[in-house]
Length: 237
Figure (spheres, rainbow, N blue to C red):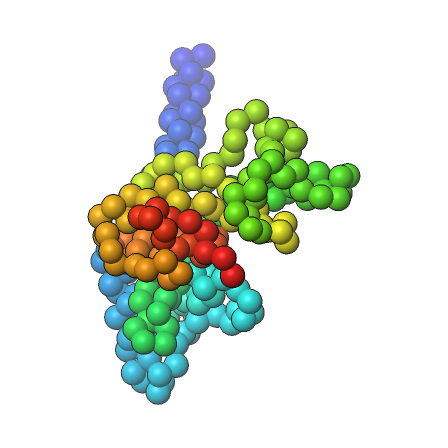
């Protein structure tokens, strides 16, 4: 009986160890290491130099939003220019998609937290189910022309769903456009960024670049914004 007890303890410890190890790996895959960004940036620069200006990116439709438009194709740069995709890259089981911005003038490596997409998809699924029955989204409030707040209670939510900001860690709300597409509302983060960078933008200019300027992240799944009286507002198309 004592022998069986020892075996059971050993088995339980093995199971717990097995559970803890992947969890530790998950922590490692969720950290935006600066050195990993630099390694990928160096690989991008070398690839561009040796291919007459080409970039190792996946093909996306022209209508793809700008910050999701140029995902890096690691198959084009590994193992010649980089040993393998970083451990925190989506391709390696991590939570970040590596993308490029400013591809025409200065291709720069940035990140998208794919967990944001998962949070949005959960709401999008409930929205589709609602529209299957009611046709139109449950609009609650007009924020500006073509941008609306949703009545999330009609989608079955007790609390308003939010997406975690890659900049501040705060919960960001979701908005919907006239096409029924969901977007993350970054006005909270933009307001804080504008306070630190007063006078850098004029009304009518897209101010989203202020978020990615000093951060490894891009404002993914966003609508364009501009500034008015020192505050961020949605930029009318």
